Structures are given as structure tokens and as C-alpha cells.
Length: 141
Image 1: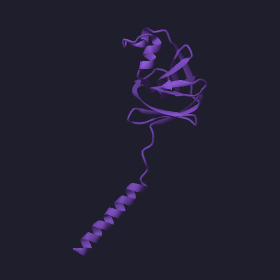
Image 2: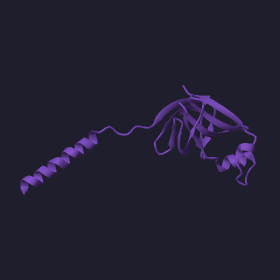
Image 3: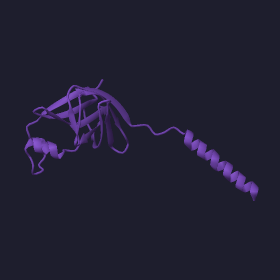
Image 4: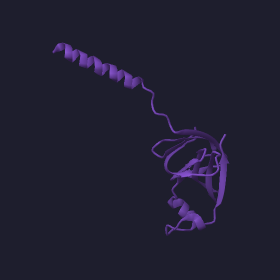
């Protein structure tokens, strides 16, 4: 009986060590962009600077730099252009991050926020597709 308990405990310790030493899942992709203007992600305004953008299998994006960071959810999208880039909607002097393209044909589209609807003058919740905004793309380094 003691032998079986010791064997079971030894097996549990060995499995635990294997689990701890197993490689951790990595993010699906990382890109780096130098954004020359402040911009909004969700409700957070981030200053101009160099940002790392990391995506996960759970459709979340982490946008981070020394100046600040934000986490947002994106809907997976496909593009015919394979170049990695960030796409912003510009309303006057305000920039709102709306698309993140990781390279290849994969990317993420971010939800329209209440602030963007307000800037577009569509407080009723209509889509900004017909609104006056300038699409600004920042190429990835």
C-alpha cells in the first residue's frame, strides 16, 4: 500500500514538473508600429509613440508602449492586402484605431465606439460608413 502511494506521489510530482517546464502558449502575432499622433482605443487615449501590438487566440489585442497601453477585442477579418498596418479613422484632430492588420491576409476590425459615433454626428447609433472621416494608415516597422 505504501509503495503504491509513493509511486502515485512520485508520478504526480513528475507530471507537475513536466507541466511547469512545458512551453507556454505564445501570442498569435506581434507587430510594432511608430504612431506619430495620439489616438483612442476604446475609451483610452494613448500618446504618440512606438507601440507593440500583440494578438491572442481569444481575439484580444494588447497595444502597449512606455507611454501607455490598452486592451481591446477585435473581430477577425481577411484582407487582400498582405501588408501589416494600423488603420485609424481621423475626425479633425482625433484619431481612433479601427483596424489592425498583422500581415498576410489576417487582421482585426475594432468596434465603433460611442466617441466615434459622437464625432461622426451619428448619435442614434448608425454606422460611420457614411460619416466624414479620413482613413489614415500607419505602416508597420
